[in-house]
Image (cartoon, rainbow, N blue to C red; front, side, top):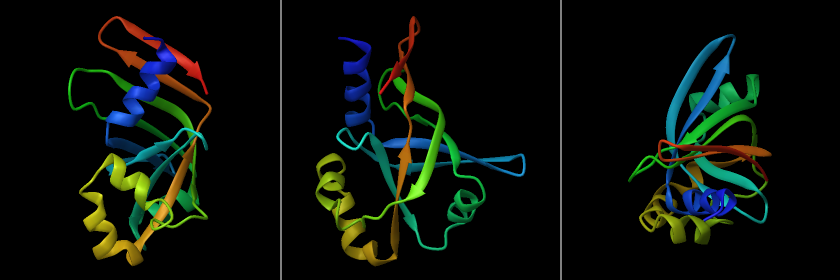
Length: 139
């Protein structure tokens, strides 16, 4: 498997990222569910309207993240990314959410009107495969 193929596999199989922000030199990290859209080359996640992280994004849209492996240690890490509020809604991408995380259908039904959709854009990713392989790919 090539590193690019491993990237796609990880982004398709892992469901959570640790998303890091920083405002005025104070870092913050939180866990969010995500899906990656290979065509748009961006990662999508949602958050409740008025959430603290939204204010952080407005102050500094530069973020970093790492996927959270559920098995083994394979993961993707991105140091230089930008977060923006999506022009789409969670309803527009509901099928992608449900395909990846079937239980997310209930979240959308119950809280969809309160959720805002965000996009994370990046051009490089570090793909870590086990203890011996660490390679940066350009998307």
